[in-house]
Length: 128
Image (cartoon, rainbow, N blue to C red; front, side, top):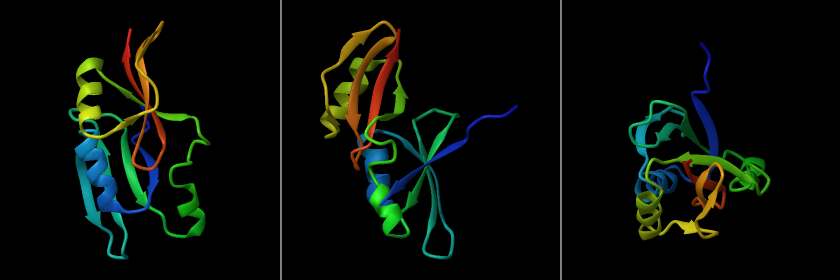
């Protein structure tokens, strides 16, 4: 069996990123290990999830810093599924998450696009 375990998200600061993903989005901090060279192995994922996690990798140079918030070229690049859209949408808005559109119903489910701390676009999606 094969599966995608982690997806790297380049960030500018570990602690700011952890605060956003755990505080504003409600993710769990799965691991935060000092690698001994000034970098850390930081993994977050939605609560209760045993699937793919985000590896928060701090940008190491100018090229990586330039990619922060632009990793998907302005497209929605991340999809956060929920069983209760209204609950999670309200909680995220109350936590200061910026939604760039109002919720809408599509044939595939209820969805709204939001930005993470860096401007990466995400779908909050309750499948139909």
